[in-house]
Each structure stands twice: as C-alpha cells, then as structure tokens.
Image (cartoon, rainbow, N blue to C red; front, side):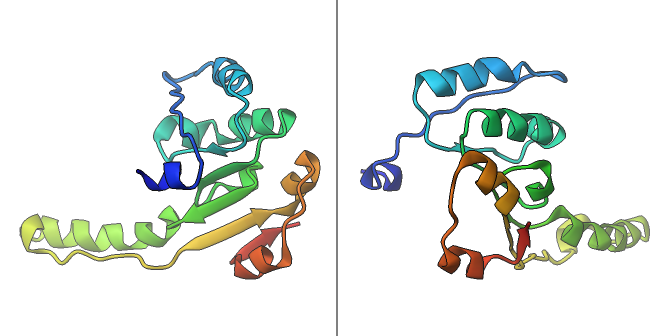
Length: 143
C-alpha cells in the first residue's frame, strides 16, 4: 500500500502541453473527478502559466500547492527550494569550467533552505481558514 492510499488520497495526473496550454480541460476533468486539491509540479509550462492556473483554481475553489517562488501567483501554498537561492552559484561553476575544471570533479552543492509560503488572500477567496499552527510554520505569509 502506498502512502497516498494509506492516507485515503487518490492521485491523478493532468498534463498541460504546449506553449499555450488549454487549462480549462484539465479543470473540467478535476471538477468531474471532484478533486479536493491541486498539486502543481515545477515544470516550465506550469511555471510560465502559474497565474492562469491559480486563477482557475480559485474560481473552482480548489486549494493549490505550487513549488517555491510561486506564492505571489495566487496559489494557496508554495513549498520547496527557491531557484533564486541557486542562481548566484551558477557563475562560480561556469567560471571554474571555463578555466579548465572538469564538471565531474566539482563538488555538488545542496540548497537545504526550504521556503513555505501561505497566501491568506487566496485562502479567504476559496473559503478556507488556515490554522494558527500551520501559519506558525510558514517562512512567509501573503496577506
């Protein structure tokens, strides 16, 4: 038994494709399946269209969780490593490689800081009350 099954959660994958994905079909499928929540994976198409996805989810009163850095798009929650934390290290690695270092010899760096953002505006719009205990865990709250 998987963890999702043990928790009574049935996951479904809805794919968005192309540079201008048709999100309404995905949300229609979610409505038909009576989805309780939406986890938006961190892929280029969802990053680019995160505001559109968040707006559609709010319209259907579906709580969403996005990757870190997407809370201001209107999702209820966002969690993970912020890409902004990694970018400052990129030039250092490029410089080393251009000076002759072998990529396989460079150390692997791990970003261990996680960003957990709760959007109270979205919670209000979809009719959710966020418990104080959960708010206390947030690294940032959008009000």
